[in-house]
Length: 184
Image (cartoon, rainbow, N blue to C red; front, side, top):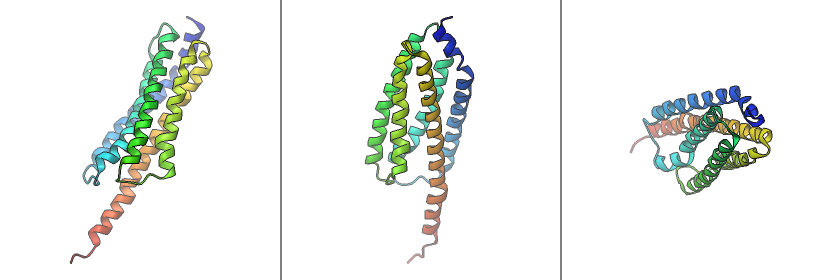
């Protein structure tokens, strides 16, 4: 086994944990969306494409990275190329998300939203592009990919929590205020 493949094998436990967490959180996100779908807000599709769908994409990317890195590869070349392509796709998707955030009208994004739905995912996916360096700097590239996977997982956790608390605390409160308004 080559030195690069030995280094990749050393990450097995890390990616088993990240992949398991991402898979479980994807399932949990589906349950939450089903529960709040009872009373969807106006323009929910636009807001969902800007805020909810990217959360699933980030969890799925962490799961995909884990699966790719746990597969029994015979050389580092295909792994590096695949990770770089995933990174490029993620960068393109992040720009699409930023556009959707700007165009949707259901919610006015705050600085925190731009940071956690656009800038940090862009950083994570751009870091994956660095996986192309695994051909010559395997150890450093593996740490970069590990950091990107963990960042995507934490971004997804934050964004899922943010969406749930918004729906539970803000929308329910607003609906309660609307229900209590006197009718003419």
